[in-house]
Amino acid sequence: DGGITQSPKYLFRKEGQNVTLSCEQNLNHDAMYWYRQDPGQGLRLIYYSQIVNDFQKGDIAEGYSVSREKKESFPLTVTSAQKNPTAFYLCASSTGLAGGSRSWAQYFGPGTRLTVT
Amino acid sequence: GEDVEQSLFLSVREGDSSVINCTYTDSSSTYLYWYKQEPGAGLQLLTYIFSNMDMKQDQRLTVLLNKKDKHLSLRIADTQTGDSAIYFCAERVLTGGGNKLTFGTGTQLKVEL
Image (cartoon, rainbow over all chains, first blue to last red; front, side, top):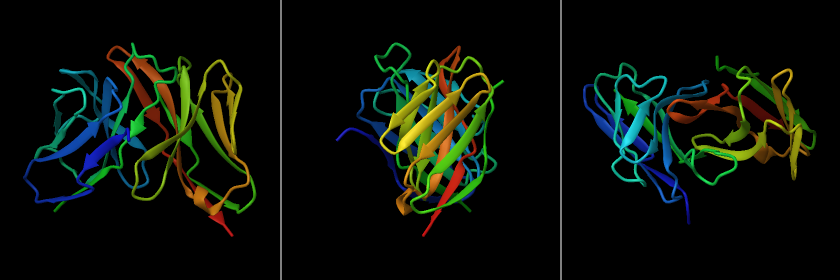
């Protein structure tokens, strides 16, 4: 069954702690993305990676870090520097620019709801 | 610049048609997408349209694109209670770093009996 998995579904942390959110895909996609969603708002891009060992900052990268050591995995670390980390985090993947897809649509995981108190 | 706008709410009766509208600003957009999000879940790709098309139909879904006015709409025929969700439109934007999507703020569709 091909898809994107995110774990855990719910995550609770104390203020000042770093926390890492997992994202794995078995769709053989080159590109992966992290978004943040706040209540009543659209999705805001945190980081994206078009290929292994490469990633770029999105619109709201401050206080976050990522790595892309494997094609299948794109973990996101929410650091203590992120001022308002409580949010719903969504991971997505798509074919890369050189991929055979005709639509370059992004496919999403189920999300992780992070609560920091 | 990139900006995608949608109305926040839409309420329809079961069995009626729903029309969700979206405007975008980037004239270089090549693909436009519609996603559905149910409570507490990720986004599900519903359909997409290439910018050289005016219309695309997929079962109960019809997408209309007016490229001159940069207006996109999603029509859901025979709307059911299971269609209650938030609907996002998105445009594909090419950047120096690759391929990004810009999302609208979402339209909450409520289907009443």
